[in-house]
Each structure stands twice: as C-alpha cells, then as structure tokens.
Length: 95
Image (tube, rainbow, N blue to C red; front, side, top):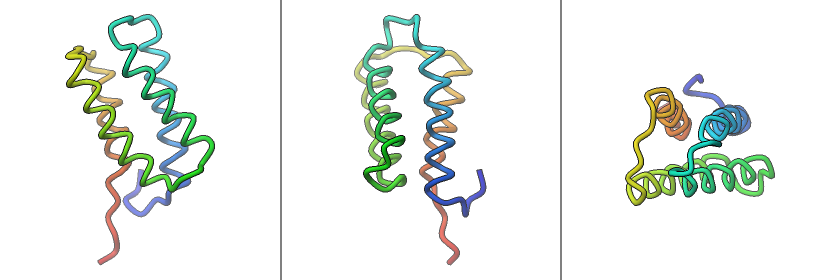
C-alpha cells in the first residue's frame, strides 16, 4: 500500500485482510473475541458509515485490547496479517 493511498483503497485492503484472518481463525475457539471484533469492523468498513482512517484507528485499539485480555498466541502468518492490518492506519501527509 502506497503511503498516499486514500481511504477507499485502505478500506478495501483492510476488508481483504480481515476476511483472510477470519477464515484462518474460524476453527479456533480461543480467539472468539478477536473474531467478533474483526467481524464487526469488517461490516463497518463495508458500510462506510465513518471515515476509513477513524475506523482503522478504533479497530487497532480494540484488536490490541482483545489480544491482551485473551492472552492468545497467534501463528506467525496471523501475526503478520495483523501487522499489515494495523499498518493501514499509518497515513503520512505530504509535509
């Protein structure tokens, strides 16, 4: 993702990553809270009722709280996808 990409591109990329993560976590009963959060934000990103950067920012906080509270270990692939997902909210401006 380019640093100058807009909210629409970031939202589409986020939905793709969230879908992949939900598919991987589907059979893991230890991550139900994380699955619930990801599903909620996937729906919110699809509806586009708020700005994408705002949604991504809130999502990052909720995901980190879920991981901290549940204390669940993720696979290397899942961790990598979560890292990509959180990096989508890093927007640099041209000045």
